[in-house]
Length: 85
Image (cartoon, rainbow, N blue to C red):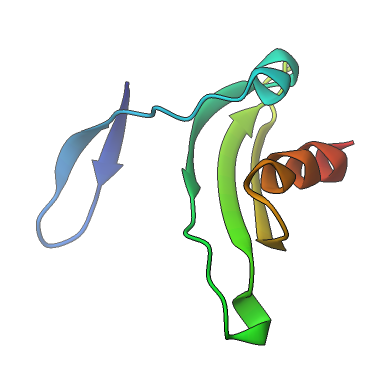
């Protein structure tokens, strides 16, 4: 669970509960959260499965990564790990 501060005309703090679990990424990074996307077909620009991850390295560098159009559900995690290198 992480507090998220929202500013603007209706400022508030919401609690973000993440259920994203992927052992390889968790071993490499402190995962703050993520969003997996539905499998979409028929629109070439977004065909496939998707993933956005917010993570932090051991030395405190915060990262945001996105994968669009992976061919398989597991493939989106493999592409994220490969891109983080």
